[in-house]
Length: 229
Image (cartoon, rainbow, N blue to C red; front, side, top):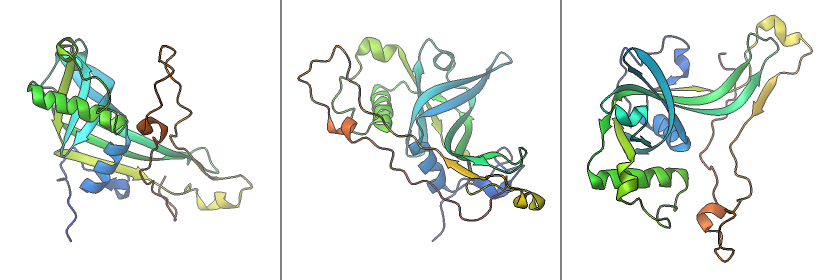
């Protein structure tokens, strides 16, 4: 069966460590669906900006969420570079030079579209809430006219996209493997603590299942052999 892939372009072609790059949709979608914050890079009047914001993937579209008073909201129809990075571990080598990190990342390039249709905008905002805590949007109050007017939603089609992934142990220089220095990977993971109720919450309101059982269940790659630095 042929793997669904994004087309490689001159802008997404790997210049360094091409063995880490992936263009298949399954890898890209899995990373985007596990992340919570993206960074949006763009330029206004020659000045570069990189803004963190919430997002959600719906099919082959990323919806970006922000304020109409922010730079993202004030400049719809921008050429952007959107990145999402998941940190899976710290790679501790025997030499300072070969220290690294295990990570999964996605870079998407393209031109944003301002979402003005009320139905699409409402669905996109609901998707952002569901992306963070599945089941939440069905229980909370939706945005009113004033709140929706103050909220900007931009759509970015996933057309020019690449992923980059590093897994596995450190890659030291051969002479260094005999050094009596601990080397390996310190795994990192995002896990929830105990829910902390709002001090103004009525004590009779129970903790909902979608909060009590929240977990990050997306599988993480585990490398077996040596990986490039």
